[in-house]
Image 1 (spheres, rainbow, N blue to C red):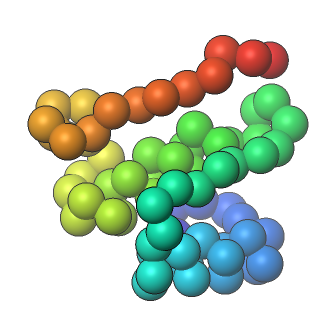
Image 2: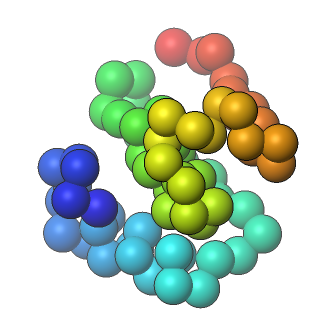
Length: 68
């Protein structure tokens, strides 16, 4: 989690999720708060690969809402 500046509670919750992931996670915040960055970080940590390699990874698919 060293790549992002996170509130301590948020960081603890994300660390807990990474230690014992469930089948899904929902990221809710106003636009521009870093949900996409957190999603990429979580995906790379769960898959144990670099962020740069995510988009070529066969089991990675970005599902996103384009709501502003």
